[in-house]
Length: 521
Image (cartoon, rainbow, N blue to C red; front, side):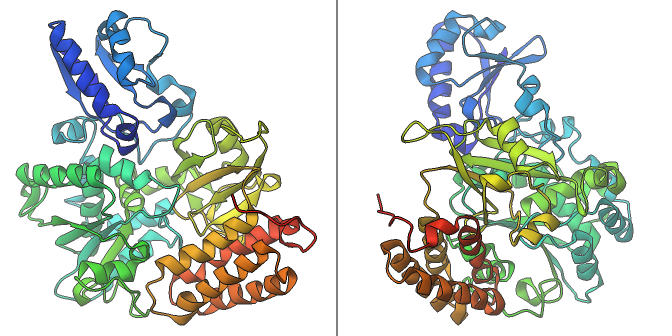
């Protein structure tokens, strides 16, 4: 029986993967060919989706991008035996875009069947957990310290300190929570992991539980990820069935179980305390800190809360040692980060690399530059890094390295690793207005600076766009940004100033009276 791999990843499905599977199945039946369809995760080379791989003599031969209408041509070219075809890619792992990466978190995504726990184990899955089951919490935390791992989110807080604080907290019950509320525009690494290698998330959560002394965990998944929901539910079911979750796991005497909970579509629930409120069945509003979740988190108990990439990063650290992981990276930014390329770019997708690569190198070497322009020009104008409230850098700043400290000096943050590329048709003033408008829309309403200040900011930017009292409004906007930064209760209001101030700084001509008024399209 011939094995054919077609991704179940959301991007692939949106590009017609399900229709490709149906057509392959239909034609194989007509030609009396026995095939097995495996719905794997995407390798992250989205311009090649839908990617179809065929296993021939133990090797996988890829073809892409395949549309439903191309399938009959594949059969005519004898693709089931690796035949030549204009869309034949060959061994996908040898394509430079993938071959030049350092895949630690995404080592199995695209390779394995995410619905099969045996396939996960076959590719070294649970190796780290087998080691940690009979290790001490102290040694696990020590490896995290040696690794230099920091939370793969906005704050970039050292992970070992969070683990240590949760471990040291005295309580009759503790929890592990996975923040899967990936809501930043231009980010999809969590989704790809959940859809392509769900067991690694479970393993990372269990390692965290062993380090802090928890017996129960929760995954808070955003409602917009139905495929991830299906895959994760299956993974939890299989892990329980095979003894990797539940009581006395693998005869170790350790207990740990995981529950999946679905969010209600609120961006602010990506903030840890709002997420915890939502998990408890309350309105997703931000809590005042302290107390911090490590002392008083879910249901008032000490809670170790990490996002998806932070959790899966712990797996190679425990498996290979913290020092081995820490050899990757730049300065105090150790390890790898899955950068996500999107926007006006030829080769959008996921690229996992050590910290320190420059923005220019990742855009040119992997992204291939701009994909299109409305008037024929292909001039890159700006790049936003770190989500909808991330820093906007001009084309003159692309030689900045991607690491936490450097971006902090710029006044920005790497955040979740989203990189959105825009051409010269992008308007700095419209983008600044969007930042205020986004904050106003997503604010939980708990604090006045965020709730009211974002709306006033949007109103003043509308006046700037129309050319009304531009200089006076810009002065007021800068003062408002300072207020938002200094007095907002959480990061939503606190970093709304980042995109606004970076646009004013890097594109000053667009915010001056003498600049031609921008007419909204």
